[in-house]
Length: 193
Image (cartoon, rainbow, N blue to C red):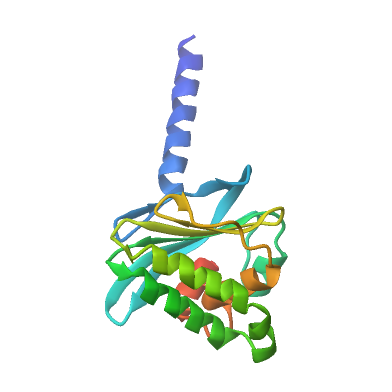
């Protein structure tokens, strides 16, 4: 009986220590090792801090069904995906939406861009309606192949999902394309050492 109790306590202790090491903390933000999107458990692919000059803007985290190391691998990975941003400073959300639009323009050719303009307009309206993100606010971009791209801000779904896979790819190119907004963050999210 004593040996069984000791074995159980050691096993519980090991589980706790694994869980404690699995969670990452960046700039005071706890990044979970897994999340669930559309009933699918996703694993943390990577996390990092987005800097603008010397300022910390947000903690970004990427969750996928399997490890990915590029935009193409992210898009090809089966099942849902999630990119989250936990803001570390106040950001005007309309300005943030404009930065996202510029990031898409920097990574998508003109012919592709013309096809996703409706999605870009809708995204701009979503961010303009939110006014500002405060420290601790979360914005999450969740892709579910069955329903499309959902944008969550401050814990609320912002609109009907975007159905266009080309728009999702263009949006992800902001972080993972050939001209990412932040190269260091790109590497951190993709788990590049």
